[in-house]
Amino acid sequence: MATAAPGTVALELRDVSKTFGQVVALSSGSLTVTTGSIHALVGENGAGKSTMVKIIAGLYRPDGGTYALFGEAVDFRTTAEAKDAGIAVIYQEPTLFPDLSVTENIFMGRQPRGRLGRIDRKAMDTEARALFARLGVPIDPERPADGLSIADQQIIEIAKAISLDARVLIMDEPTAALSGVEVERLMTIARALRDEGRALVFISHRFDEVFSLCDTITVMRDGAYVSTDRIADVTVDDIVRRLVGRDVDDLYPKQEAEIGEVVLEISGLTRAGLFHDVDLQVRRGEIVGLAGLVGAGRSEIVQAAFGVDPYDAGTVKVNGKKVPPNDPAAAIRLGIALVPEDRRKHGLVLDSTITRNITMAIRRRLSRAGLLSSGAEVTTARDWASRLEVKTTTLDTLAGTLSGGNQQKVVLAKWLSTRPDVLIVDEPTRGIDVGTKAEVHRLLSELAGEGMAVLMISSELPEVLGMADRVVVVHEGRITAELNREDATPEAVMYAATNTQGASA
Ligand SMILES: Nc1ncnc2c1ncn2[C@@H]1O[C@H](COP(=O)(O)OP(=O)(O)OP(=O)(O)O)[C@@H](O)[C@H]1O
Ligand SMILES: [Mg+2]
Image (tube, rainbow, N blue to C red; front, side, top):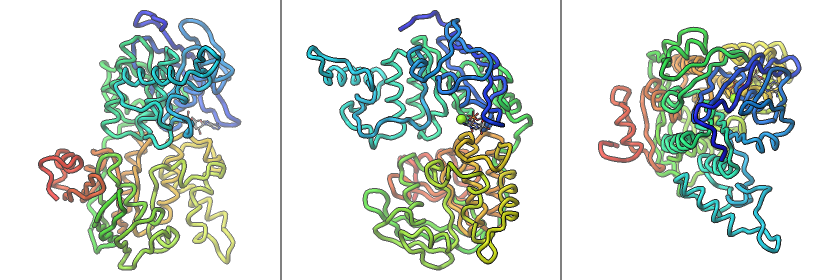
């Protein structure tokens, strides 16, 4: 690979701007990244991070400003041009071809050919295997990409970047959908790539990751550059203040709520191979945290209870009434709402406006004699959009053009506005910036205070411990512990989540 001395400027953007119609996505973005470094890029939802990444990757051309690679001005017209110049981008959701093998995905469009001009499959598999060995990840290159975890798909994108000898690697929220172990694995790989002299950019809303992985940090706000520092010279509080423009003193504003009768009652819920004999109750006013490792079966349990997935045995009741299986419409009528984990795929209509998306589930309530009152629709949407700080110039904006985090907020708003008896939220603050995170927590706490029963799945342990009245831990599809707020220490939850010593059922 191109071996520039560590500390050489690899990537330099100055005052780049990008406007879409009326929306200024980026007004003056600047970023300087050197070789042998992992550079954090942070900012609130809608600050312009992904837009800048897309400019670097050749997907967008900037309206203004300068962009240079290793000291030379560049003006990419396509992503292929950027790729050829040594840029690789790893997105939160990789875009592999599911039907092709892992190897085919890595060598897409540049298969080495053998003597007779045939594609040399063996040579490719061997090279792919060597790449994975180097990354220390056991992935079979001959298997199809379909069915691989997001974490493994990202590793394949990284293997591809290395095989292309990418000098600049950009990771846009790569860890949002990963479990703790997977995050560790990704970090180890990132450090190795840094040590080889590559330049890395890391985008994340999780400051613990940023501070343990990165050496330099650039803050953006409202489409503009704010500051760049060495990580060693700043604290998390410094960064949060610059990012949000104020102090965020209480990230977990848990209110005391009066806990009443059982509202949601799940008994003996079983689906072969996924979860077994799950008994779970949530009371009025209570927030129950469903903890466990990614893949433990938490999402599967709540999806079955809500009726989007089938189950083999067991019952689900709301306020004593049986919820029929496989019938989410009935579940909604009985008072359950589920905010799914993958909100972009489920729950958001990308080519519909923010207003439409927020009011989608309460159309009927807002209608009189079958006519939708557009005044009521707009008022409701405006109220929820402002409570969740959805960043947009107008609520007529199409949901698909919002930044990742703002899309998350719109789906949350959609379900919160239904004011259900039972609110199930799967990873409620994934991809959401630190200021709004506190706001989402405050809302959940408030809704519980108003008598809602809240079941919250979260992979962020501090979030579970900070918000839950009771923590139920799932390990391999079984409940391994149920802890009261006082007993729910990080250790107790981790023991139960990994089913090691110390766990008590
Ligand atoms: N194609 C587009 N059309 C219209 N507006 C856009 C488009 N792409 C981005 N925007 C707007 O530009 C702004 C910046 O978005 P961007 O995706 O860069 O934010 P971000 O910093 O990556 O946020 P997040 O942390 O939520 O991912 C947002 O207000 C977004 O709505
Ligand atoms: Mg983004």
